[in-house]
Image 1 (cartoon, rainbow, N blue to C red):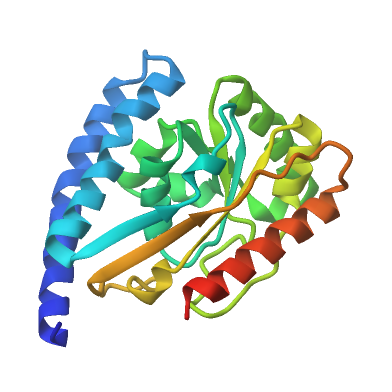
Image 2 (cartoon, rainbow, N blue to C red; image 1 turned 45 degrees about the horizontal axis):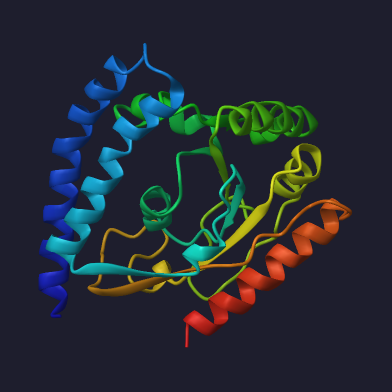
Length: 239
């Protein structure tokens, strides 16, 4: 597709996103009396709408491999972070979920307000050990409510073709809670780059790995298995 068409389609998507998000924020606020899972099911309609817009306007489609690896019980989803795409697409692929996010995201007008209604684990990274204690405490609370907990172990979006340092928090929550860990790889950064306005048409592939059972494993072992599987699979998807 010609660059000028990519620009205008990306612009149309952005304008529609700006127009639609306040409406969903209003809906999110009115879901306050409901059970957290019910709130999530309503609010996640925003993500499904964004995926539809990406497909129809920007020409971005998705292909998913490994859905048979998703456990029937609440799990920890440790996912590669390249783009904003995976934060949207995971909501279509996995059961009701909450995310471990930077607390500052809750301050964003409209988007952050709606996000706050989805019961995220919003941590302040600079708090160090206290942030880890909050992750373990609230992560187990969310699992008990029936949510999967989504964690981006690199902590921030990493440019396509690169890898960041995998932090131990997700693995600590796994050993503390006993919840299975599901690694997720994808190549979204190829079409929708880190902090990029432009969205190129094509197919993004998401690959879901076999669940890792934490029993008998140390957090460092879980973290290493997750990193090895994700980075190997990302390399394969990037060819």
